[in-house]
Length: 254
Length: 254
Image (cartoon, rainbow over all chains, first blue to last red; front, side, top):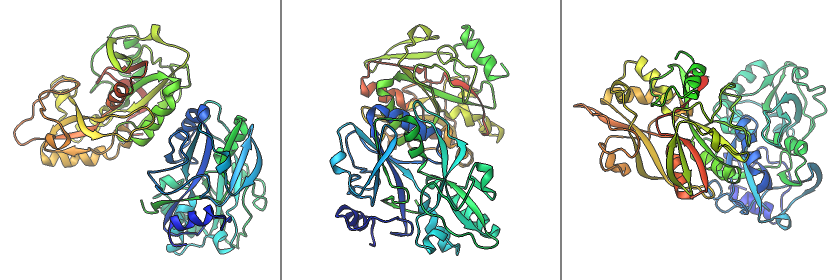
């Protein structure tokens, strides 16, 4: 899989359903949120008010499962490895294709993802633990409230990568250059300060080991909207499955 | 008028109805767009797709003429010097207070304004011609199309300030630090290259003199949405009158 198109076509024909960290290096990865037009203004406003977890990459036209600006040949209904379906705010099932669920009043949002700068971290010689361990990145619900917008509210979700202090400083400096992929971290060190009680029990994804001398570093995460969808209890929503992202045609160093 | 609150209270009691360039130095000024909830998603998306002319400062809750995040004590219906009223996309009248026109389904948008960085230009020793001449800034419709979003489309509107080439370079460097006030210019020099035929006939505001050795420098302008409202023919909209801005409580160097 050398190009985003090849990757997306593989997903489209059901040939891949795993996490996307480290895949198709050099291209921007994105979170997906699909909901009904009726709630689209509130959701777009939620993103505007919470740009760290929800940096907007592209918003589809109403009823169009396409993102012509960032990925002209993509179909958002089939080109991600896995989807989560929510009804009345409750997660009800995981699917690898949502074509049959598409409706004319749906709007799709692509939001930036921290996988986007992991290539740059690796190029700088930094370890990315979940890629090394071939696991999904660990993600945690925090006690940091998002700015509410209309019917949407909820807590910030973060992704975590372990680093030595020196590596952490480098990772901060590098990720700062990617404001559309969550940018600089929101916390480092003691997880309890942001309401995380146990690093070994992530709320999404899988746990990864912290080695001696390492501290956890936390970035705002595009799973945050899934918490907000839960709070809102909107009738219907589709998202990517955490860690199973949409890969755009945008090059990483945009 | 030392504080934004004092300025807004003066407007509220009908005591001021002029342009705001140079007023209440040190505070962020903002363009205003008010429209019905039905069109708010398309408009917010238009802003998201056109961040140079439409950098979002704050969006009100539906039905609330208030902006608690940036200016807690303000009332958007009375605290600007002048308003423009549009019906079916057509400008129909200018008012100094729109309280009687407020409805429960209206949403208000504050968008960044280039007046915000004029204090910084002056501090750097650069002339700001329309302030020197006590005129409203000249604004021009260009031939540069905006990215359409839903029912909104139209041409970019720009504001113009004359500078010598050396001053222009300094002005570019300074305005770059204010991405939420339109940031760097979109053009300098020959106006015809962006579809402006006569600098002495601005489409909004007033003309200002260019002195020998000066070139015009053009910034994206928050009047751009007024063009898009015209194109859209939406039933109802309220905006600020060009050059007659809302002054927020945000400090300029935010």
